[in-house]
Length: 312
Ligand code: SF4
Image (tube, rainbow, N blue to C red):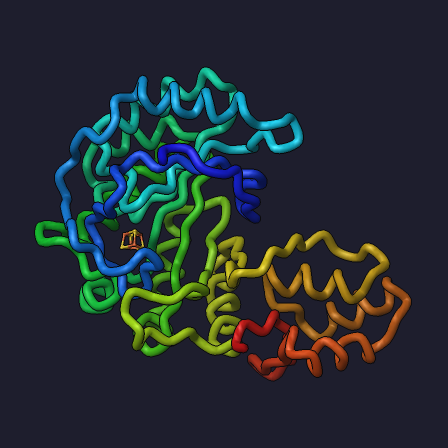
């Protein structure tokens, strides 16, 4: 299956997925948290999977079947593996532009030092790059790269790409308990991401069964801490913890406002007090959400924050 969806996505609205890799996963990484299992077919060699015309025809016929209200906001390359392994990625993006729908690519960044990969990604309107670690040993432990890839070259490639990319650049960092969540490493990762000047940096946690069953999700305290560290580095940061949130502010429904905002970022006690005031209610709503296990209060730097609870 080449085209699938569209699927609602907080980052992209309605996103029509494109699987530009053949059915079995081919990836340059075998991340411990991968939701599609261990990578049996590892590669760093770009190759032809589909002719761009094949992708075009498949997506065209998929789009024709959609009613107007399900027409996608983005066509997103999010395959069974790493999309930049596709030698025809750039040609395919150029052809798909004819549909006048913005194109997104979610890449693990491992080939970003390659000028041809950069040139292909430049054609996309929205790119998400993976930055789980900036320490060689931690990167190896989490992403378990194919032989022949070097973190140093990836980081250099990311800087070059970010400096020239005219579209919307986003980063994504998966936080894993005990691996990349020390204060020191979070600071180092945030400092590096700040040099890329992304539109947004997303912090995520594994919400589906990981390839390696010993992988543990970080605590709500830790994700609040990571969010603070990223914010303090001047990065616009949002959380991706499996909840759809909107950060739309005060709508008059405190219950929904709190759930929406805390899905995107932790809510500080003074902002929470203001929200309750604007929504003309009181702390009972917060107590009720905590008692139902929907949000959690955490302490950071002498302040109380509220965050969506994702530990069930
Ligand atoms: S880069 Fe993506 S597809 Fe590849 S192993 Fe990691 S999570 Fe899975």
